[in-house]
Image (tube, rainbow, N blue to C red; front, top):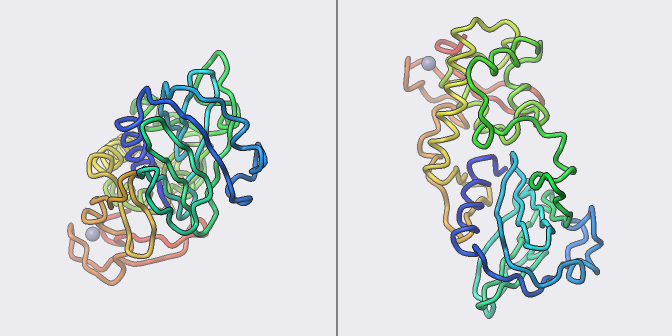
Length: 278
Ligand SMILES: [Zn+2]
């Protein structure tokens, strides 16, 4: 599933290609993809021709901000893609939403498994994010949460670390891949209670959150064999080459040579090194 680094990569690509361009028309065909509002039939008429004044992100949500205060919000879900193609190009199967920009560029929302969604809302005086995303916790890249405040946030939570990192209301944007990579980098086990961390451990975790996500953004995210993630140009990311534990069960730890194991945690597969994560 696309996480913060993948969504950020898509956001950067969109902004690089569409900054200031005018959205001319839009249409939606996928009822599952446009399930919040408006209904798919009135998706196109809910948008007036308007220039794109921002491409923003909050956690795993992406927002295309138009000059009239409208925001098109996209969540890629498990398999969603936002692809930028020439207007005359053939549209891939599972294209559920089409947004046509001036100059003959179509932005397609393609999503075979339909866990993703697109909705239209307004950003008020406060701007991004809209109220629909008010439940999300801090965004590690967008918000400045330093090590001291991060340690305080952890101290009040008894939740296990893996579950806490996955909790979008606590921190927005981290999913199954990056939570495992972050915990490995911090040398912490998935099942440690957040409140049990020492000051040094909390600082290590903060540093790992920042460094793993920043590096993953630089490498344009992770594309796995069995997943659909592509950037707006249809290109794969490269951070999967840096994975140290994710999907590496049975292989030896690059730090201590012990064997990486897979367990079930927070309802997900989790990968960790039993020797160097404590
Ligand atoms: Zn190890």
